[in-house]
Length: 225
Ligand SMILES: [Zn+2]
Image (cartoon, rainbow, N blue to C red; front, top):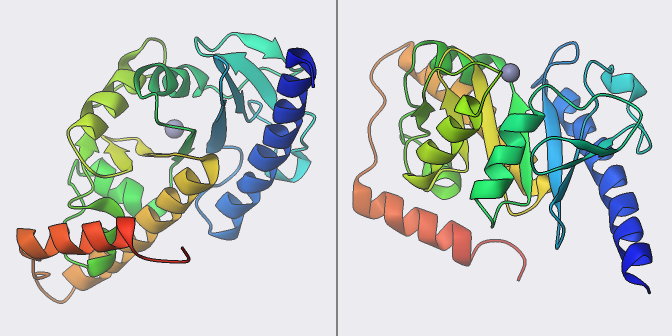
C-alpha cells in the first residue's frame, strides 16, 4: 500500500471505531444531549479523530467524525469538531503513549468533581483500574490550554487513567480509545458505589501495599493472555 492509501485505511477504521464507541457512552448513561465525546489518535501521524460538535448521538456516523491535527485544526470533515478538541489535542501532544481520550459529565463522578474531592481507593476495583485515588484536576475553562494542561499535569502525577476536572467532569485516557471509554465507564461505576457506601458510614481505606499488589496484578496478569 502507498503511504496515502495506508493513512486512508487507518482513518476509515478509526472513524468507524470512534463513532461506534459513542454508543457505549449512551449505553452506560454517561452522557446527556450532546455533551461528552470520544477521540482517537491516528498512530504514526499527528492527527486525531473526534466527534463533531453538537451532533446528536443518534446521528453520529463514521463519515461525520472529524479529523484534526494535534492543535485542533480540522484536516478532514464537514462539521466543526467537538469543543473539547483543543484539550484532547493537548493531551495527545504531551502524552505520547495515549491513543484515546474520553470526556463525560457522568453524574456521580461529576458530583465528586463538584466537591473537588478525589474518589478514594476503597474498593479493589479502584486499586485494579486506577492504582489509587482518582485525582482531581484544576478548575479550567475552554478557550486556551488550561484544560489540557490540567489533565496532563494531574495524570502525570498519578497511575489513574481518569481525572475529575474540578467543577466540570471526567477526562479519561488509554492506550486506545476503547481503553479510555472503559476507564470512563469504570470511573462512573466506582464514583456511584463509593457515594452509596458513604451514606451509611466511612468507607475503609485499602493499605498502600495491597493497592500496589492489586494494581500490578490487574495491569499485568489479569484477563486473556
Ligand atoms: Zn465538558
